[in-house]
Image (spheres, one colour):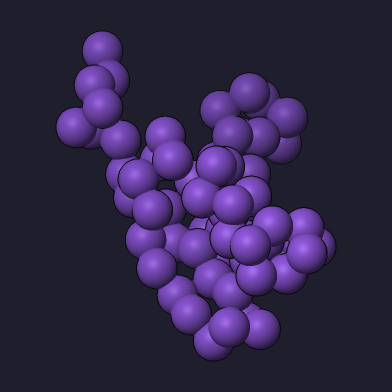
Length: 68
């Protein structure tokens, strides 16, 4: 069983602010939303690193058998 301590930190980038950080898995959605509202008028500028997101999507698709 996965515990909170086992969950990874997720890289988040904001090219407009020229920042890169790692956020606890369970806080990513709220942190990105909050950053975008506070600094970018709610526009989706900050995001999970696209390379990491692509990798996660590929692994999920593989786990679900969608690539067979």
